[in-house]
Amino acid sequence: MPSMRTLLKLLLTVVLFAASAAQAEIVVEIVGGGANRHAIAVTPFKDETSRVREPLTPVIRNDLNLSGAFRIVDAVSVANVPYEPADVRYPLWQSAGAQSVAFGKVEPAADGQVKISFRLMDVAQKKQLTGGEFTVSPDRARQVAHTIADMIYEAITGQKGIFNTRIVYVLKAGRDYLLQVADIDGERAQTILRSKEPIISPSWSPDGRRLAYVSFESKKPVVWVQDLATGSRRAVANFKGSNSAPAWSPDGSRLAVVLTTTGNSQVYVVSAAGGSPRRVSYSDGIDTEPAFTPDGSQLYFVSDRTGGPQIYRSDVNGGPAQRVTWEGGYNVSPRVSPDGKTLTWIRREGGSFKVMMKDLATGDTRQLSENGYNERPSFAPNGRMVLYASQSGGKSVLYAANVDGGSRMKLAVINGDVQDPSWGPFNNP
Amino acid sequence: MNWKQLVLGTATVTLLAACASTKPETPAPVTSGSNASGQTTAPVDTGAANQGQMKVDPLHDPNSPLAKRSVYFEFDSSSVKSSDKPTVEAHAGYLKEHGDRKVIIQGNTDSRGSREYNLGLGQRRAESVKRSLEVLGVKDNQVEAVSLGKEKPKATGNTEADFAENRRADILYNGE
Image (cartoon, rainbow over all chains, first blue to last red; front, side):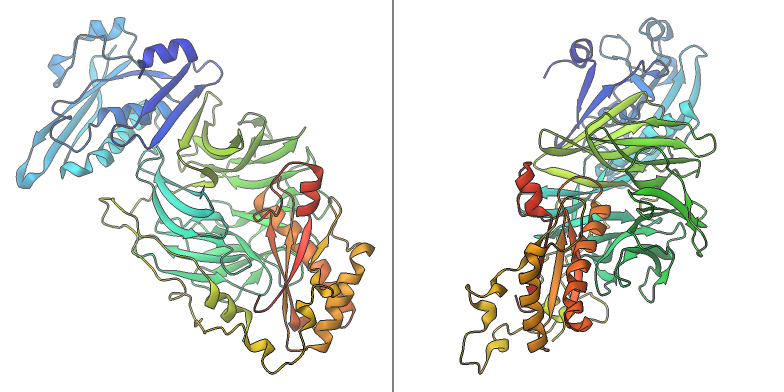
């Protein structure tokens, strides 16, 4: 494997392999200048190769790199591997271009556990920015690494980190459809449901414990809710006709769904436990892809009531719908940012399906993805990145784009097409 | 026998437990159907419909217009074309004669665009066929219009002929 520096120089692309199984591959494409990226060095933790199941620092570097907010300074060529603050040789890090340096150690603890500790030091100020220690069993090192990355991310950017969150997507493997949940770096993928028939539109409950999705296992689309821990599941919308497009209310008590009992696709709200649906949208056309605002008071949705599909917004309790998109003849798949200030969606334009982003206050609109075929954007729970699927070479892969437009990461999952992704909440029970 | 029973009796979905993970909250294995609330799995005897009949059901006669089970649509359209009128009329006649028979109409679309919006477009096509049958006297409770959207394309190529093949609604009789 070529060194990271070679790749950076030659390709402006960093390929980081996950430390353990190398099942997932993250390719970070730097678009634009990336000038605001914080330069950080993460030196190997003491005894991380012997005392825990997998070393922590490759995971930490990978996380920080894929956030698009950091540039990883090559620590190998700097002759300093500190374990304590007194060990840090600041002039060396300064000349290597590092703005901060993170280091740590793994020590034995009682009952077969280990104590993992780390510190993040500011190079110019020579002071600690954050730090912590965790006493865990050695096989929990990966989660601790994600938590350390979260703490570093928060200390530098002031925003909550998302490295302990998960994503859901549908993997097409041969003739099978696999609903999978994985860490955001593509590791620890678990198959939640396997079917010979399509599965689409998975949606996370706000508590991170359940998924709603659409399964075609019964010759028609039916909305199911499945508990991730127990695997138990229930059809929550199985009415005559098609049932689809589930979206959770922020309090987790209700689901917006699309039903066709009137003879056309319309938006309804049902209890997450099932029960009688209440109609929300009223049109003669197709109304679909509802998404709650973070305060739960409104729904964004797609409607072709005026011709082509456009995005509308209406009160959850009914009332007139306001049209939100006016440019372009095809605007679909809306999602609202966690702070309610930004909208992301797909616009068809010139044969491309582009991931768009709009500041709802100013109306400023820009394109996040490349041209080509992209689908189903969703915000990270801290609002700083958008996950979507993109087709290239007949296959579909996942991308996460930094909302600042500075970088775009490809999450390549092996052995199949990946489609219909959704980024999970902070809650990761 | 209703659709729900049929469907649950024949569903072949398996739920998998995650393997090789250390997280204590890994999903537990589940048997398909056992958790569907308020629904029971009934055994299905697909031969029952023909019991006691001496002559061949015209539904299974390859020379009958009933052998055609698909209705095709123009781009961006959900109107049943005159070329498919004989197919729709034949099935309407059969369903009126056999008030116990039920059909599910699955609408399909070609492959580009939002999955959910395409589901809506496929539904519009299926509903169009359903209304055509109802206009000819078929009862509402004999027909269910549903959509597969772009999820189950019959043709997977990218030629106009492939797209046209996928702009389609299929008529499925219960038990099929």
